[in-house]
Length: 37
Image 1 (tube, helix red, strand yellow):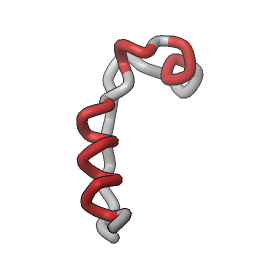
Image 2 (spheres, rainbow, N blue to C red):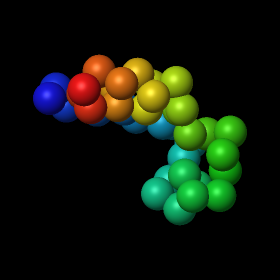
Image 3 (cartoon, rainbow, N blue to C red):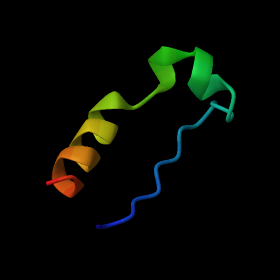
Image 4 (cartoon, rainbow, N blue to C red):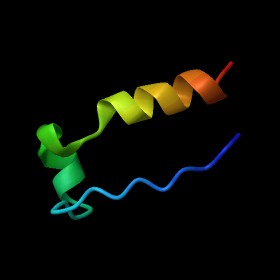
C-alpha cells in the first residue's frame, strides 16, 4: 500500500467533518480502490 500526503489548503481538522465541499472524495475513492483489492 502506498501512502500519499494530501494537503487541503484552508481546511483544518474539524473542517473536514463539517465542510463536505472541502473533502477530496475523488482522491479518497481512487486511493481505496487501488489499495483495497
